[in-house]
Image 1: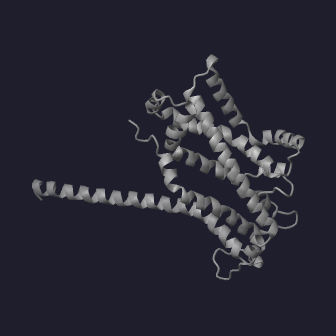
Image 2: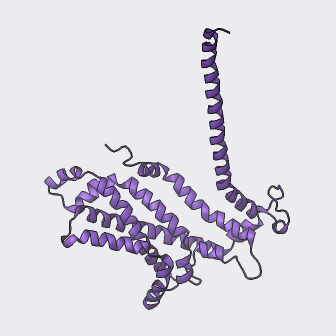
Image 3: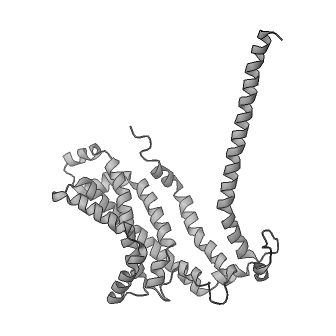
Length: 295
């Protein structure tokens, strides 16, 4: 075979090898994605299946992973219970109020710290204090909150949970919004300063509309954290102000575990967070990508 023929075959072989490596690489990536998706989705599928299984199917060996013999009795027992309905309402009220208060107060605090220079480096002192408060393990503050609410006569009430959750979420909101305000150009507000606008007026009419996306992202994280919080609800409530995480945990008994009802109530508590995330998805994407293409 001549040298010219060999040279013409080499590019074809190189292209074939490149296509083969590309196919192997794509197959590897898609395989990893399928495995990752299975790891994420399977617990949700198992939870849904457990909420629809008959009671006898929970103790079979090996476990039943696929079945068409389903029932809605666990859903009827869990959601038809007036106490569980009350706990869902308690959770919704506490979460909504705590999210609004923490987001508004934390945003105002972050804006003031970003725009006002206090003497004696008090800005840095306040920021470090807020960070230290955020770094405390939540369990270390449970007993102080319990003693405080007992002194105020607020044990087993919704205001006790609102106060606790708002205080716990404030450092997180402040630090998250502070980053946004520090990246926001000051030139935007200078025209308003020339026109004689006060600091609150600048915040209300100029800064607030521009920070809605970041506030929505922050509010989503606060909402999820408060909705799923168990420790403080378990510590500060006993019956009247119970939230849904405590109700789910109560299905775990000394002698038995109500798998079906617990699974049904867990899915019911998961749906509001999913609906909220889908509703504000546009704000979520805009808030996460803010500043990604900044000059």
